[in-house]
Every structure is written in structure tokens, then in C-alpha cells.
Amino acid sequence: MRRLFLFGLVALNVLAVLAMAFDKLRAVRGGRRVRERTLLLLALPLAAPGAWLGMWMFSHKTRKPAFKGAMVVVTLVNVALAIGVWRLVRGRF
Figure 1 (cartoon, one colour):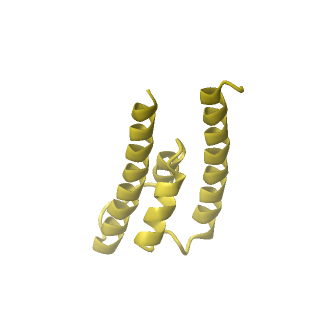
Figure 2: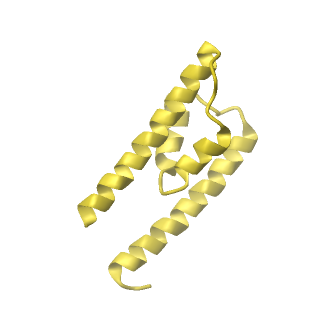
Figure 3: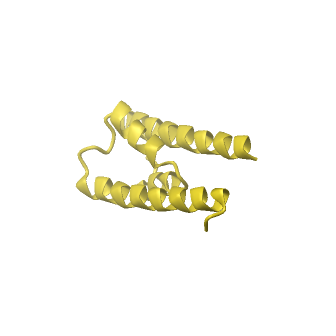
């Protein structure tokens, strides 16, 4: 069960990085973009580290204060979710 959870966590973070890479590629080439809401929702289920990594690796959405502010909120939600999951797994909830 623990391995499945960790696999899912890694997969979600990789997906967040890939979404940032895809959106950056589309931005450079002038194609149809991924909505900011979609990028934020991808980061919501414990994938904020992947989204931040994607933003940093591809210099993507780093000049948009509103998006960065929303990412901070998503990160705080990620921290709360991580604490909740940890307590649930450890039986202290």
C-alpha cells in the first residue's frame, strides 16, 4: 500500500513537471496553451513540488505574480494534506 502511494505521488509530480514543460513549449511555439487553472489543479493533490520544479526548470510562469501567489496557496494546501495523510497513516488522526 505504501509503495502504491509513493508511486502515485511520484507520478503526480512528474505529471506536473511535464504539464509545465508542455505549456512552455506551446507558449514558445505560439500554440494553444494549458489553462493556469489546470496547472494549479494538477499541483493540488500533493504535486506542488513538481509544479515548482517545472516552473524553475523551464522558467515558466515565473513572471506572473498572480500565478506564483496561487502556487503558494496550493503549496500550503499540499502541506496540510501531507500532514493529514501522515497522521492518518501513523494512526494519530
